[in-house]
Image (cartoon, rainbow over all chains, first blue to last red; front, side, top):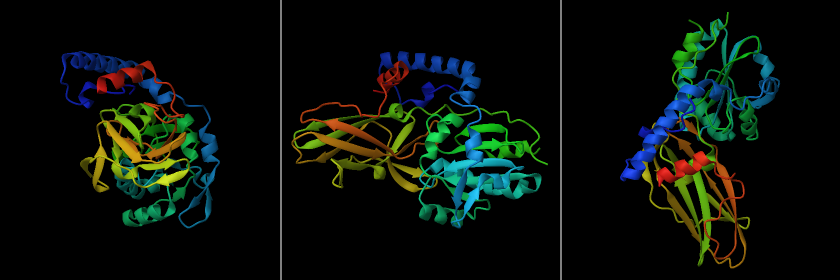
Length: 184
Length: 151
């Protein structure tokens, strides 16, 4: 997981020197990926930081403030997203499907948009999002650095157990199959 | 009720780089214009329509940007992006010191994530060349290596 780049991700090479350098970079990246998976998963994570998030309140689409404790006791998927983020929009239909499929088993998605209200309202309507959408100030992106998202990128999801234990930190897309596996 | 297993992470894309490594920028103040060069690392892209420029606190709308590559984005449709190093410029009548703020937004194709809109500030004097932004940390050895192989 630590491999920053594989050689295949780079542009076509045109010089021998570059080929050698890319080969070295690829090998180093593979080695780092093999050795550093666990390190990456826990890199920069400060134990207990999620407590701040789980104790926070955010404004919802309807303008009312919702405390995150509303969903305590559920298996909570907290998904930070924005409409300007393509991968965020791509994964959300899966979340709608999973919410329908597994809500009876205790799954609860909560989308936290770091975005302006108007585009979020429009997108939520288009997608018929069936779980709560809340709004967070952009300063929350900094808070995510200590929760497993050191570059404050989106999408970012946390899966939290009914006992408030973090089961998964995901920088990037969360797949339907991964969610389904939790309830298999 | 509830999930019964700890999640085993499947094969995941590489971790995202710091934004200043993915899109390292330097600015210059040449005769009558500001020039900002972005080095876009392979596997990353910047959106052409998301650049903003401020000079000494004033928004500048007349920005010169090269033509980008048309990307058929699954969610945004056809958008212009830069997947290669690119140069932004803007004419100016400022003759003294200038504070130039550039806002940009991009994504990492390889990591499957997007960076939030990012603003970088350059303190420029007339004739200044290749000035790094105030906010950027010094480049790590790894970043210098990646920058070298991307050129």
